[in-house]
Length: 429
Image 1 (cartoon, rainbow, N blue to C red):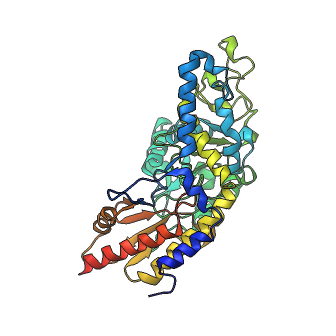
Image 2: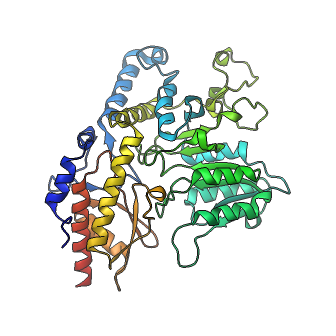
Image 3: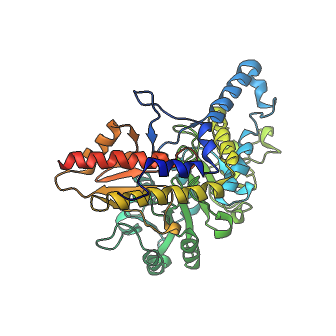
């Protein structure tokens, strides 16, 4: 048994953790025996911040007390409420406040972005995505191609890992852009791949895509709140993300969107318009001549759901309490490295980690497969779930585990490996 594989060692690491008290800002689900769950599923749905609950209740109180006057009254009036999230979003993704906006849901935002940034011609009609894209992204891309009268079999370039490998190589992505760039309209890739947890080199992809005359966008569902980014500096044309994973804003909460400022003053850029994207100074003149706001807000359609935005504001304020994304990333690197170290020291023969080991190419999530003859990953997943672990399973054979720096501890990682080891030993006996 390795010296690191002990409860005392895990507790020592927690005692040294400067962010350990942030866990108290969250409601941790309980097991039937009253103990905290070992919740390692922030890659799917983050836990509830206490501030999120408080802020939602505050707005329910405003609605109860003020009715329609809540749009213009109080510390956080509803009319400009989405603006209260702009700084938090900008800090998370490395953008200017004018480049980010909270609106819609993730796939809806991808569609709205493709209205503006997928403008196929007979010569340039392809979209480069990954072969194992999240299904919603694949469906959105395929449907956009069909909508424009093209054949997905000809217009979708699907990036695949090399034979025998699980993750994409940076050089292979760049090579595909070089090869297909002259006939490609849009490159749409994830910041963090949902299945393997691989972090893609967004800066290099953007540079290569723009050099070939392509628009470049990113799905940041698994990146926002997980890794620091510099979207303004890197220069992609757009990005979109959900807020209920590492941003802990609640199931189905309103998503975020980034549009680089170089597009803000282009009034000729095609878009599906709505009145909430109209210039704020003249919006309530109710004239039927659309004048887009010169910011990412121009892509808004309708006034947003305030209760959801309140939850996001609580989540963003909790991130700020922890010192921001860079402080969280410092802990995340230590937390995930510790979990990887435990798995490699105790279960090297039984567990394969798909997620790259490089800090540059990995976030909080580790994707695991089980190497046990006669036993599949789902059997092991069911066993650890019954023992108090919450993570998730993705077919055909991956257990996704994400120690989130805001509310997970080193002790969580240790206890998870103890339970996983017991489950594997039980299945093997």
